Length: 531
Image (tube, rainbow, N blue to C red):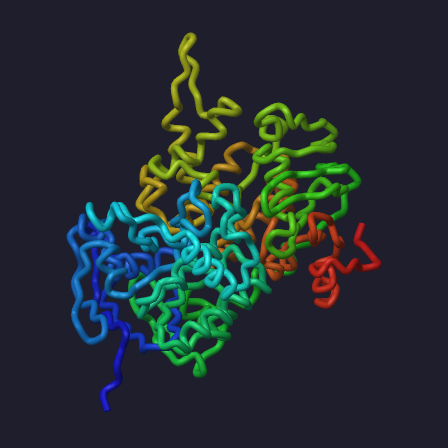
């Protein structure tokens, strides 16, 4: 008996000019199956999904070769609306939310429930009124199904990125005609416990007969939840396998063409303790919605890599945002002995602090500008770098800008066509590398990196972590790394503060037993702290 497929993509190829980004790619996904699509940044995953969703970037660049077949019928979508009408949904890595709308409004936008009125009966459906009671009930049901305990009436603006990801997922789950659901790095901003909950939700969705394409760089999640997988490398299928027939080392090797065993070599992580305090925090409070910080004290030594971890919504993201002046902050903060003035906008930057935000598109990047302009923008505006004086005027030193941009592209392996490529056209992982390059252009004394490997594949992740270690050990840069990935923190950090309930629950050594990290995350204090 012939098997049925929710989706088949047959012999799909796509060129951007002379650059072949997809080369004869085929895959097929069954109803109720969780199908992992894996590959490094730039491997072709995003382009393949753009084809599936009828994105204009494909149509405007000459279309594609091959076939897309939905439920046995060939489809050519001219827009994402066509794809959605055919029962295809997507949970995006970059949020597609309207900040000024409530959670309910974002979940229901474009699919609003209405109630007929006298006027609508006479003049037409457009005069029906919104059925807010039903929409709120539906939103509550969708939120509860993924374990998100937040009021559906809250506006999205100001929510932590982890909460925004859950709203994205709830919106897709609420749709009734879904046949195929694409999850694009859905756990990238989630903590380990939240990610486990989401994987459970994915299993329950699949049991309802909905096919799932799961794009992720977390290979352990692939092993936990997927049924089958396809690995892309440089636009080609290098393997399609049943998950039961493979393991993480093999998948990593297929992705990058080499075997990756460790995130960072042990001899690169040696740290010599310094008595000098780089960052001193006393009675620090931050009013960040969903990430409130309550009266914390902390000393971070010069030349160390200090990790900050914890569950989403517990305050870890609030710490860097408070220091950088993104949200109201109180208390005392000293940077290399200089007191930070919260009332002075950008004071942390002027005192030698650079920050890579967890919200790269909302805060970190000028998406319509070139890579090189993004890299030097902060250094130019804040420190007057990369400028050439000409009387009273100052011009951009284009030669110096281009040279530094090329250096960063090479050092961080930014996959692009060159320094002048528009940042908005880069993959998410490469955008993250541009954010890091922009921070380094400031030549900071203290670097804060918040979720630095969010959405980045295993090969690029190793490169970035090794570069952070090199900056610290060989160039004397003090680094604070805020991350939901406990494994990453434990692989490069000298000490790790776990934040729970807006407070520092414990400060642990990276090799502390797993149980101590678990207790700290649940706000049960560990008796011995690492000084």
